[in-house]
Structure formats: C-alpha cells, structure tokens
Amino acid sequence: TEKLLWLNQHYIKTGDLQHLTLHLEWQFKQLGTDTSHGPSLEAVLLAQRERAKTLREMAEKSQFFYQDFSEIDEEAKQKHLTAAALQSLVALRLALEKIEEWKSEEIHAVIQQVAGDLSIKLGLLAQPLRVAVTGNIFSPPIDATLQLIGKKRVLDRLDRILR
Image 1: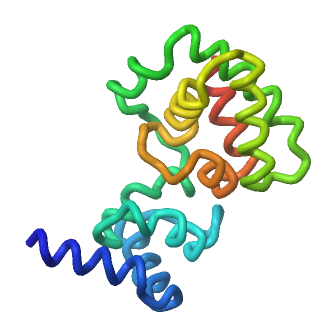
Image 2: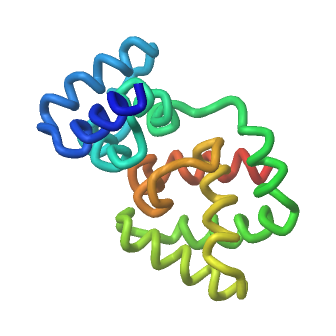
Image 3: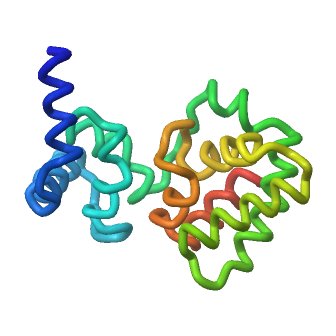
C-alpha cells in the first residue's frame, strides 16, 4: 500500500494537469463541493500536488478554498489562536485590506512587513493566520493559500475569527 501511494503521488506531481483536473473535479463532486465559486481546479492542483498522495485526499484537504468551514481544529485553535496572536491578526487584517493587487508576492510582503513591525517571527503570524482562514494548520504556503481563497473571503474569515 505504501509503495502504491508513493507511485500515485508521483503521478499527481508529474501527470498531465488537464487529466488530473478532471479527476480532481470528480472527487470534489463526490464530496458534494461546488467548485464554481473559487479558484480554478488547476490552481488548486498545482498548489496541493506536493502535499497529497491521492486526489481524494487533495479534494478533502482543499475544501476551504470553496466553502467556509464551521469548525476549527481544536488543537490548532488552542495552540495558535491565543490572545497575543489575535492582536497580531488585527494588525495583519488591516494591512491585508490595503492590498490593491491580490497577488502572492504582495501578500507575502505584507505578512513580512507586519511581522517585522510587531517584532515577531514570521511563523508566529503565519500559523495563526493559516488557522484563521483554513481552519487547520495544513495548507500550501500562506501567501499562495490567501491568493487562492481570495481577498474578500480572507478578510471575512479574519473578521469572523476576530469577533
């Protein structure tokens, strides 16, 4: 089983994007997920292809790109959404709101700037942000994740967490 999963992941990493996208779409449909409002399936595939051994796993771990989540992983919440982290997220939310061109590079620059302004390590800001916008600690790089989720959804999710 381990070897088959490795082989499957190899094909996900190196396979034809159009072919894989069709099968990823089928997996999302099996989960009852509407992917018409969110990033392209190809973009999700490219972002997640290093992290998933099967397309089913990829679809399950990519739900947050297309639908809001009702629950946050409890362990992640307790570890990363502390009072200090929430204060940092307030500053970050204000900075993210000012981004005009919602691109990965711009998002990354803002996150680095806020971390520097607050004199904290990037991870101490990125992990609470990841939990706030995905509900978990696992996602592609945070700047790519935010770009794919979209500015409005990111800000809405931050507002929900901050309330």
